[in-house]
Every structure is written in C-alpha cells, then in structure tokens.
Amino acid sequence: MRASALALASTILMAVSVSVSASDQALRDKAAEAGLQALPTEMQQPANNPITPEKIELGRMLFFDPRISASGLISCNTCHNVGTGGDDNLPTSVGHGWQKGPRNAPTVFNAVFNVAQFWDGRAEDLKEQAQGTCAGWGGDGQQARPGRHHAEEHARVRGALQHGLRG
Image 1 (tube, rainbow, N blue to C red):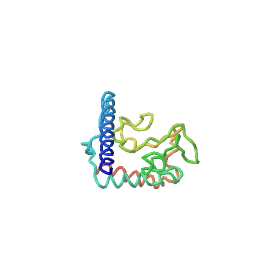
Image 2 (image 1 turned 180 degrees about the horizontal axis):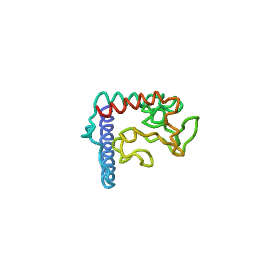
Image 3 (image 1 turned 90 degrees about the horizontal axis):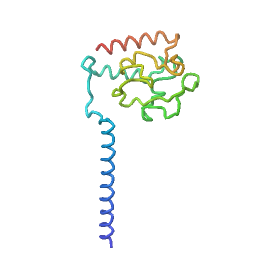
Image 4 (image 1 turned 90 degrees about the vertical axis):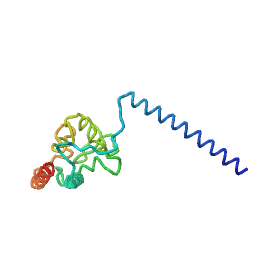
C-alpha cells in the first residue's frame, strides 16, 4: 500500500512539473514575441562611469538620507522602499505634508535597465535622475526637493555626489 501511494505521488509530481515547464516555456515564448529579453546575468558597467565601492556607498547614503528633502523627513526609501519591492505598495504615493499624488512610485529594482527614468521619462538615465529632483504632482518637486533650511546639507551632498561621479 505504501509503495503504491509513493508511486502515485511520484507520477502526480512528474505530471505537474511537465505542465509547469510547458506553461513556463509558453510564457517565455510570448515574452520573446513581444520583444522582451532576460535581464543580463552580470552587471554591465558604463565605460565612462565605472562602479566603485565609494559610489556604491555614496548611493546608499543618499538613498536612505531624509535630510536633503524639503521637510528633512522623507528619503528615497520612503516611497521606493527596498523592503517592499522597491516601491511603496500604494495606489498613489504620499509626499510632504501627507499630500497625495496622482501616481504611484515605480520600483527602483533594476531601474538601470529602464529606457528612461520617472513615469514621464524626463530623465534619460539614473545619472540624470540623481542630479534632478523627484518632481511630483504639479511638477514642483514636493516629494524630495531640498528646502532652503537644508541648503548647507544639500551643498555637502551635492559635493559628495559630484566627487563620487568623477571617481
């Protein structure tokens, strides 16, 4: 009895894996027909901007630092939370003063492979995106624009960013 139950379980498992394999292949074929490709297996480095440990640390510092926002309370991670898939899991994002925006925060995961940055495509790449503000609803940068009272901190960060991008 025990041997026949094991044989039946093995048969079911094999049937399910063949079915999943077939549906996976169908999905891959459909993606290929749509012009989609798999992500590269290795990180590609721009020829004119090599990745360094210093740049990685600078990016980490800037991404999680709320001091450069207008309120000093909101970091990039507030809306692009790496713990929740690189976004905020909200239908529309919330900015300074609990102001609700018209769209949600896109994930930052694999953003380097995007054709353009921001929902409206106004930044060609991550380097251009990092130099600008996170212009939100109304186009006035309510999400992450540095405030006047943060001018000194903003100058420090801009200097670190410019030094890091040259390095």
